[in-house]
Image 1 (spheres, rainbow, N blue to C red):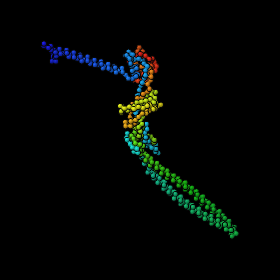
Image 2: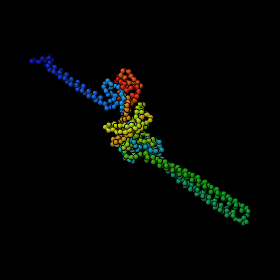
Image 3: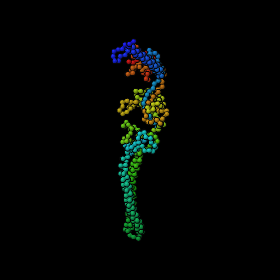
Length: 428
């Protein structure tokens, strides 16, 4: 039999074309069967949900899947935070006569340091520049004191010599006045008595003059001595301040540079440091905690004592358990320029990993509130959560205003507005 060829350079027998078409149809049917099988497996997997709330709300036949049911409700609250050490040794700006000083040099953040190693140096220019002037001032005060003591010694020596002369004059006048009146005339007797009295008066005056000069000299010497001690104290303070401006590490460990509160970043060379301000710290890595942020819209969703599971972003394969230890009573801005407010949440880890954990590492926190038993649940796909008050989509096409409790990814707790068994429809 001669084959029936069609006209054209790519012509094929009609019999072969028919076979090719049958083959294509067979392959298409095979792929359709495979796709239907995969869809069936996906449906089975979706029906085997392990979430208690999801399984309870979404179980059953398709006709009653959107039904308000009463069952146990569990949820997880996700927070983000960073690691901090529970204990750390801080490096503070030392106390000096100046209120603030610029940072001249600092060790690199994250460096492993040894106890006693210099890690921070504050600028000492203002102290070293005045130190030589203070020393010259001390030298001048010392010379003034020595000169004054010499002058006082000479002056007091002259007055003591004058006092001795007056004493001798008194003795001489006394001897002449004690000569019996019968041996001389009355006039001579009276003149000797008057000379004796005058000599005693001059002696008393010289004695008072000496005592007055001694008191004045002692006061002048004490004043100069005080000035000298003050100059020495200023020099000692400046020298001590210069020594204290080189700050050593208080212990072995990893150096962590603190945040500059005025700049919103870590301290750098040239930044000013106030007396008592902590510029660096060396944390104890054997006890770590997490400082997380809870948005102000989630206020009241967590409480102290709740268990948590923390996962380091750098090591997602390992988790660490802990519990909430504190929640700040007031929400604060996340940064100076941010409009968002959040509560500071403190979380203590049950164990630490000093080999991996470092302060500042980001952490994902899963807070696990206790489950709510016998809770009335509605699927989220049947709720309008776009604005308050919230509404539920009823199966008859109407809506009902509802009051909601906590939610998870699949369902929400109904506090008021729906009864158990109420039928809902999907939100459009």
